[in-house]
Length: 165
Image 1: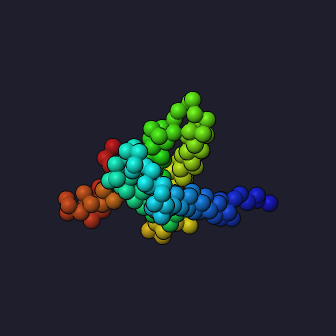
Image 2: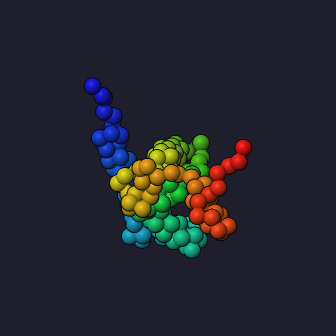
Image 3: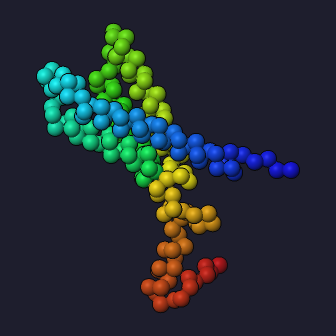
């Protein structure tokens, strides 16, 4: 009797998709909340902490990266770049060991970065927009056979020559 794992049943892939949606929706809600909360943006502008162009660029980036993570399009790259962005913005704005609230926000961001690292490591899995276009079972991951066939075609051979011993 064989024992089935979560990967065999697809529940693992479904769990990764759920995690992608939850983490992505957090960043989308965060960016939309700042956009639709003019009082919060006014505080940042009036304090002179962040120039308007940097703030709007950051919000647009977070929204686009989170959307890519949610739908599974270039998931690894989006999660990695968003994780780096979250770390540095959190470090610059929230890392103050003397302020308990700022440090708790910093640790919250580190927990989100941990989730983004897991998404970066796992990729989009099966329930992703990019999954139908990605590597299928049975295909080779390397490009070596394709390169050999291309070089053989250039030399006028229909198949690559066997290696001589």
